[in-house]
Length: 96
Image (cartoon, rainbow, N blue to C red):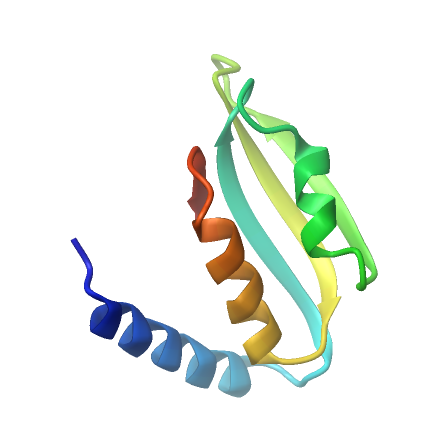
């Protein structure tokens, strides 16, 4: 189990990598796996309501899971991290 300190260090490294990898504001691809019947793709719209975004959905071969990719214009690495932290609080969603 990760401690808060481990998570803080992870997100700090992630933020540095985001700054290095692209210009901000910029387009970012968020990726999630959900149990097909548990969470619908529309659920994610609330986290991107203030941004321009597109949602792409792909079912697994057995249709038990869905891959959700969200392409969105994001203002900063901090905003990316905030969205990931909020969504990570929800059961049945795996963040990639």
